[in-house]
Each structure stands twice: as structure tokens, then as C-alpha cells.
Length: 259
Image (cartoon, rainbow, N blue to C red):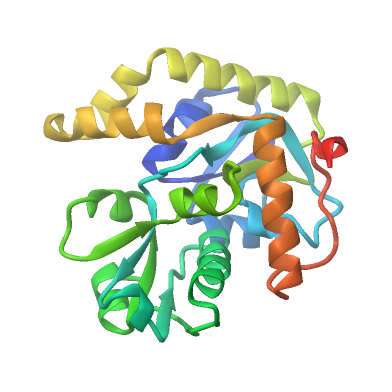
């Protein structure tokens, strides 16, 4: 029985919907950071993990071709501002995130010319924003605040403007990812789900939200991780390592030969 960790966010629908019905698979749903912790603890074989969890795990494989990425605006990974960017001195990080927190730290240090103070924020987004000058927010909560009360910086768009590259937020990875049969199941599940995306969204969200969610899944999120996405991932690792934010141990990437 393969134990698979899945984030319970809308952007995981095309990758993970229906996995509970696959023979030989047990699905565990949790926050991204906790899925990485469960892989560390040996409680899962494969998980949809934040890519910041990959360095330091040369024993983990990565299922080829699949992930959660963006080329430009991602809409669900944002920096919410309580004051103008130039005045940001204290930033509250999202406790549900690993990758987005590292991305925010890199981009803010680059944009401001210095590193502001980064602190662990509360789970509630409004409380997190209120506790600092700016706060990282991810997932469905961030997506729902697209027209909310705070100014926001889309971190997917910020990364692409900075580097010219896509950004990969999560991939299927773990000690069991080298299993080709499992990889085939996950790829087939994605193809099935993307073909019935309208119905998946209709089942998952209220009618008044469906057009926005469909637009988000089709226009903001890319699920195929190819050479361009891998270049973006390698650039993220390089910059994060140089800043002392990630382990120097390299993960095994299917397209790493392009580096």
C-alpha cells in the first residue's frame, strides 16, 4: 500500500482528485509543510511537497513531469502589505509554507536591498498581516483575497519578472517516487482530471466562485514540469543556498542534466 500525502488546496485538484479510488493507495491530506515532515518521519512514501523540502534529501526521488508551477502571476502565493513596500521592516511568514517563505525572503532582500526582519506569523491571515508590515499568504485563503483590503504582491509574478523563469512551488516527491508504476498512476490521474476539470470545480466550490477558480487553474497554474520549469527550480535552489536559506545537498531532478 502506497501512502501519498496531498495538500488540500484547490490547485491540487487536477493532480490529486480521485486518488482515494486508486487501488493500492492511501491518501493523507494536510498542509504542505506537514506533508514534508511526514515524509521525513517515514510516514509517507510520496507527497505533493514544497520544493524547499527537496534539498537535503538526496534519498528522495521526484515523479517526472508533474508539479505545481507558474509562469508569471500565480494568484495564490502573495505578499500582503500593510504599508508601502519601501517601508517594510518586519515580515510575518506563513506557518503553512516552506517554499513561499523562502521565495518571499529572497525577493524582498533583492527588492529592498537589505533583509527585513522575518518572524513566524499566526495561522490566521488577517492576524498575520496585523502583526507585521507585510505577511506571506498562500493557498485558497490568498486566492480569495485577490480583491481584498490589502495591497498585494504576487510572488510568482515577482519571481518571473526578476529571473525570466517559471517558478515551481511543489512536486510529487519522496522515497517512493522512483516507482514507475506509481508515476504512471499519477500521470494518468492528472490526464483524467484535467479533462474533467469543469466537473471537479463544480463539485468543489460554490457556483459563484467557479469561473474564477477555473480561470485560476487554467491560466495561473502549470502542472507540467519540463526543462524551463526545472531551470527555474535550479535557479531558486542556487539563490536560496547562496542566501543560506536551503541545504547545499542537491536533490535528484529528472531534468537536472540541463544545468
